[in-house]
Image (tube, rainbow, N blue to C red):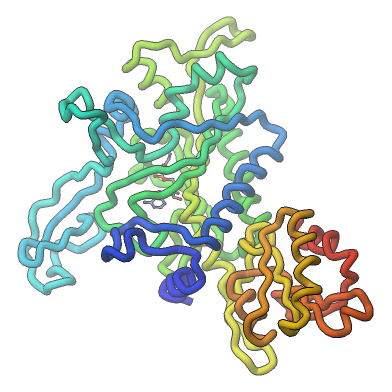
Length: 431
Ligand code: GAP
């Protein structure tokens, strides 16, 4: 299994396209095609559901992408969100200094002629309005979390939430990565799903363990192979500038064990910083102690696109059925972009099967496909490759017995199902 196979599948079947493709492409930026869009929607949906299905109080939020310099100064990103960068003076190729051996020559041109390492801030800068002066500078957010922190007071004063509670957000983030790589793994424009859990300091450790555990359970629930997931605690020298402790949930990608999601104890760093920089009170009143305090935050943060890539790796399978090789995405039915395919055995049977397909589609609202082109074997393979859990085939017997053949993606086993029962049959698979 390698990355090239996933990239090729994504392009071939319309999951992902290089951004600005017809103009030569934009490095580290991608567009999502029809199937990729459905997969992303399903990933967001299962994440939201996993939070809604806890007994915890969590509200959802959507912050702006643009933020003022003040926000990023207070958060520490203006000063600390840097990667070390070096250039090869001979071929002008640029590298992250911590990812190469500067004692060795450039892997691109073979010469050893490095610039000194400089700190490169990864935030994208822009100007608001026509005046390109200091006052108009704004930044595209490098994480969604800060918009939650700066709205903390707004949320508690306009809703009925009480500590402990969470604010969750899904949204775009931007990082001017020096070397975007491994397809969707390290991008310049990506999407995050973040939960900021506000609690009392004395409960932060308990909630940290709770959320690490919840997030591990989440991957199990969406069918990710247990052996491909592990936890890794950060050493003190690996911690981000805001973190007291971090545990990464790592996935065993073909290019090694890598961070999929980070769970971090951010202490009360962010709210304290924003309170002192803005001069606004961001503490809450404790009815028990009759004192005000700034709550601690436990954060769970994962990229939609990185999860997308992980799901494809985990599901990608090659097997041999009746002597014929096939590629099959053994993806959880909850995540599958297309839930079922309706395949009339011959074109002649389309007129009878199409109304049945339309009826079930309108009844369930599921994304499904009706496909008449090619042999039935080819049509099964096409659906296997995009992870469709079940195919229904309408044949000449269907006219007589009111049944279709249901063929399972994973086992390729077939069974006859009453057309009247199709909706229930499908719902049972997708649960
Ligand atoms: N608010 C905390 C935060 O942003 P992070 O570890 O920098 O922490 C969290 O990012 C998650 O966002 C990562 O675990 C990863 O899933 C995703 N992510 C970060 N940088 C990314 C990039 N350049 N491309 C794709 N996903 C990225």
